[in-house]
Length: 175
Length: 348
Image (cartoon, rainbow over all chains, first blue to last red):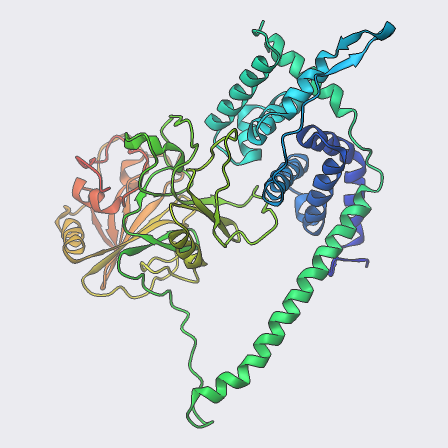
């Protein structure tokens, strides 16, 4: 039997883990990218979550919804990364690009999706996580509460405030 | 969805396509897991080496001749120091300052002062007021929770750390809070305290109960409990799975009053209500009042009146408001069936 991190992982469980990662890995990376806003950090977060899921895979694979279980691990790994990053450094606020892109003939186009993306990246971490889980993952408030470990009322508040900030940043009223 | 919400969704979906590809993801996870395992193994070997080196020195200092029986390690739960009390949920036990109340960390604003006040002990289940307190999202206290979906982040969470809130961030805890989490099997405890010393003392007290807790209550309702000291009454509340939900130790006048309430309850079966089904419609819990010379079972949660009552061996008595008053430890929240005599007020 192959050995992994000091413990025996059955051939069947290892193959099952690989197959699951092949099928779900891309979606996890997309979620992590939207959460972190950075390709390298997205890879780091997903690798971290999967490395902790691996030794427990024989149990995780039997829960009712393994996808949701590992998704929660990815969100937690992101939160942990955010905390460690903040303790390690005190970055100077980066100038946020305007989301303007060069247009034909030398003019400037405003890429609205880019502006929304950048505004979302600038949200406080807890609000951004809630907004991403709500509008990208399309989770219900109760599901977001289960993923993040906060009460549903707090989730609703975070989403509401996040949207309000986006609305202000985009300089418009909601239609 | 509003138009803004739709645009946010579309923007996030479009940007998600820029994510890195998943080539080598599983292998990368294995490598990271192996690195973590090697780091832990090195640490464990070092700890064992230190322990082995320490033993001969300890024996030498112990004194006495070699024929002395080694001291038996005391596995009993130590009694809480003055000003502290024992709190238990399932098989997880800890000590908290006696001043800590009961409730939910997220409903701190019910104290009416506008700022988080005294810490509370929170358990799963029960009734949570539907109120949002704004920020901070939680007050102080100790919160028991299931680890079924909890994924611990890296690092030792049992060492209290200062909540690092910064302007612009959502305030999850009070700004000056000290936090910690201790996991033990299926349950964990999250501690949020106003100062580091208190947080660490509570965290250090968390341990898994073997058999019975410090209040004299077995983890499982069907297990025989330890002897209860004369003049005390252990109040052990069990849930529908017959697992310990809360425990309390009554002493002095409170213990006397609880015992007297049981003794004063009229003999006979509970009556009232309609015919009972052959099997319970809903599972219900029970409270065990443990005295020196007997265990008394109090049942009040069944919709069938005949199931409710006070029993000790073959002896049956009817529920009274006084018996329920002592059976419902502070922090209990739940409901009653129509035939149960409800106390005028509850212990807090």
